[in-house]
Every structure is written in structure tokens, then in C-alpha cells.
Length: 544
Image (cartoon, rainbow, N blue to C red; front, side, top):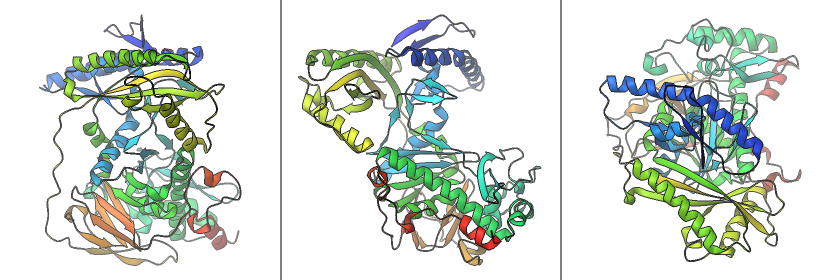
């Protein structure tokens, strides 16, 4: 990538890199954005380095990047734009690691926090990387891990609109004042308040009892803002809030599946974040997914991703050539140049040759198309020549997966060559969960579904479960950073690493959520697979 020198917005002299591909507006927008955030990032990193040194830290200081890798400080500050969406990457990298440990390769990672939910598709053990995304209306042409975000979390506010319909979000109560049950001045009901009213969350379990929540305030907020305007009970209002919030998450996962051509019947759901395990069993059931894999510590799962990430350097070069006539030596020389440059960066990071791996990629498209497809290229296709038919087959396969069609007769052209250089870091594998004394169940009266009857459900402290333990729903599993809900008809098993494996005892058939399934109006999901929504029940109850 071409270097750009010339802005001194901080004490250190900064150097950034511009995108070598054409289309001036995207290049200019990216460069301006990176130049703007560069001094801010440098001041922060320099201050953090100084503080750590003063505390006696002598280890290696690494920073998470938007593409899912980590980088040394020098590499991270050389192009600060790689840090713009780094906060979204940690949870996805942790989900990839958890999926590998379980022996599976396909999943949807769903991280539900207080204000938003992040979701990503993992296929063949990896998450895709975008070459460009739009942030606040500006195109940013830098590699970022393929994550979608929606405004739906534990702090999403429930409200009744002018048409007398119950809505949840997109406004959030935030951390201050937060949900009404926090007793910090908030008066508007949230999804967390609804979970408290239904009995899913209780004061003795919330954050291990370290944080006080007030069920009475949650009940009052739902009563005044939802139940009274709709003429329904507070329990009906709480269940409606949960179902509508869940329906939004179901729709987000379904949209992700349609856009990426996923068959959700063959994908696991990995719910994380403080609120993810509350919804996981409902979402997987509504979508007919293969099962649920709940991390050992859902609330800090994204932070665990930092420990699972490897050093990563990416490089690319503009390469506008026709696949049919480009000399094979020219393609090989381009990849050799990229490999040489990134290998030098890994050596500078202290990664020996045996710890370096490289993934070759190319941006391809049909002649006349506007959008490019990034295709992973096995080294065998460019070693000793260029396997044009093999490369074309990879392109057509991906084109058909994403768009539902492909034209093998249409000519293909290169748009750029790229490389992903990985430096494997030495790390200690987490030990297996230690066996404990048999878990002692207590019981709590909660509401899980219609009819609105409170049933006594076993409550087990998740920390007391041992590898190999099995349970059948309904069940609540509170822990310090989250609570997992297991519904009737679901079976739970504790894996060796402490993760929870949840499956349906009698799985219901569900048509795959693929692009083809939604290509015409005649392809509609059967009623049993549609997200359950409380709107119809609420309107019937309120007489509207």
C-alpha cells in the first residue's frame, strides 16, 4: 500500500497508508477519516503505554484490529483506521475458537449487550472479512470483520406508539440511568425490566448479588408505560416485550442467513453478552437451528477473543487484468511481492518463519459488474502456473452461494490481489472445567410462555455444573455475568470446557433460510417457523 506522510496531529510523527485501488472518492474518504482519528489514537496509545510501564508491565502490548487480528503498537498506529471497528471483532474471534473446540464449523455468533446486538456468520470455521463499510454515511475502504449490528439489547426501551402497538427500541436507557429496576433514576421500562417481572432475573442472582435490582420498580415501569395504555396485565406486558425483542433478533439472524446463503438447520447459535443466553434458546427454536453453544463466561466473551486472536497483517495491490489472458507469471509475481512484504512485517514482530501462515485472496468480478467478490485462492492454483478453470470455479461457486445464480460463460477479471499474513502467538490453552459437588437445585416461579401461568422451575448455579452433567428444560442457569434460559423440550449437556450444549429433544422441521427460499412470494416459511410475536395476543387482550 502507498504511504502518505504529512500530518503531525500528535507528538509522534504519523504515517498512514492509502488504498491502492481506484475510485477516488472512496480512497479520499478513507484517507481523510484515518488522518482524523490518527492523532487521537496515538495520544491514547502513548498514554496507555506510559501508564503500563509505570505499573511495571513488561509483556508484549498488542491492540485488537477491525479485521479480527491483533497488531503491535507500531503496526496499529501506522494505519489507525484498522482500529475503527475493533470493538466488534473480539466476540467473533472468541466464537470461532469455541466452535473449533466443539468440533463444528458453522454457526451464527450473537452478542447481545445493553444497547445493541452484534451478529456474524461463521462458515468453515471462519468469519468473512469486508473490504469496505459505511460509517456515519462515509465509505471506509479498510478490511473489517463481517459483523452486523442492530439496536436491540437489555436496555432497549419498551413503548406504545400512536397506533396502540407495543414497540421495543431502538432507543435505549443506556447504562445511566439504565433500566428502571437499577434504581438509578430510570422510569422507562426496558427488556431487562421485563425479564425481572417474568422471574428470569432476580436480585439474589444478578451480578452474583453484587448489584441491587428492584423488582418493584420494574413492575411499576411496565405497568405505567405498557400495561395500562394497552389494558393488559403487567405479566402480559412483560412477555410481550420479551417476544417482540426476540422477534427482532430472529429477523436479524434470518436476514443474515438470506444475504449470505446460509442453511440455518446446519448452523449452531452461539449467544454471548450479558443478555444473549436469555434469548438463545428462543431464537434457535424459532429458526430451527442445529443447536445452541453457550460460552462458559458469556458476559466477557468478547474479551476472551483478544486472547484467542493472532497477529495479522494484510496487504493488497491493484491488479486489473482479465483472467482469460493474464500471464500466469504476472499473478505469481504479484503474490510473491505481497508475501515478501508481509513476511518482513511478521519478522519485525518477532514471529519466526515456522509461525507464519499466508492466505492468498483475489477480488474478482464479471466484466461489466460493479461489485467485486473476494475469493480465497489455494496456493496450488497459482503454484507452477495459473489454474484458470479452478479459480473460475471458485468464483462461480461463491457467486451462486451469495446471489443464487452464476453464469460460467461470462468472462471474469481480476480487480486486485491481496494477502492475509498470520503470525501465530504462543498461548496457554484453557484447562478443562473442574468437577464440583453435585449441583443443588432451588426453585423459582416464573413465566416462560402462554398461558400466563407461573410454574416452578429448577434454578441451578452454573458454576456448580460439572463436565458431562445433563439436564432437561425448563431450567434457569444464573451466573455472575449472565443467565441462561432453557425451555421445555430442550436438553442441556455441559461440555469439557464448561460450555453448554443445548438441543431440541424433538426438533421441528424448518425450511432452510436461504436466498432461494425468499426469491419469490411462493417461497414462504411455514407458520411454525415464523417468529412468535406478542402483538396479536396483546391486541386481542386489549380489545383493539
